[in-house]
Image (tube, rainbow, N blue to C red; front, top):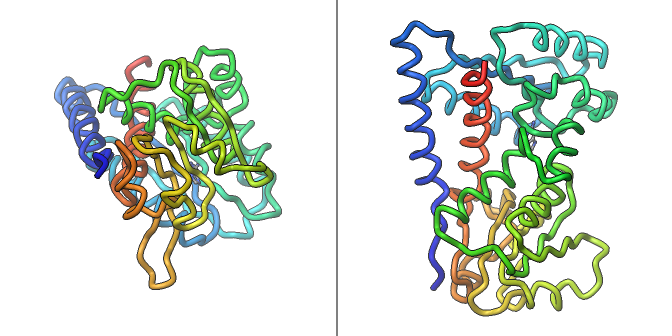
Length: 281
Ligand code: GUN
């Protein structure tokens, strides 16, 4: 039975340390960090994510503001709002929850956010810095995964890591962060042939494809480290990852559970990058 990588416990520890830092600032009468989250429309998943981010910010003790906009809001109105927050010196972080409605160009919106306030790490400038091995603001999910692996002293150097998924939010930045840890990285996706042949060679498998319980035990070799980024609702309503946990955990050396693995780490990294901006102010 593999060891569970307890993202919840590490996230709590990191958030407790941020809380102490922020309460020190409060005592000293300093300005507190502020995160603005923009949520457009009423996507159920996004509402849950945004609520969790808001709760974490409140727990740590900094300002968080959630702007809930109508599904029909124009692209121009959203761009104007972002400009306002870019110029507002009391705002340390701006996050626009994705996905956005179809009439709004996501790339354009992400580009409009001041790269310094892009605590999600999605701006092309921040992506580019990661690409050249000089990360600044990092996409929170892959960043959180690396932190979790390091917490458990999991060796990445020289290991073969297979990433399943090539999204800008997870797959691509994940591959770069693993490269920076000197792993040998294979990126796979929906058109990959012989996926199982590749994953069976992997020392580390990161699954981010959004298909409930896709990765079964026959996809991995014994002793592999398995990281599950999935969040899917099972037919009966309960939350499952992209990994069939019960059978894969029997074969893996380490594995992240869902919930309580990657998710809480994503939020902690967001909080950390917001606090870091205030620290550098
Ligand atoms: N949608 C799914 N994950 C994320 C995330 O980490 N940040 C934002 N802004 N939107 C998301």
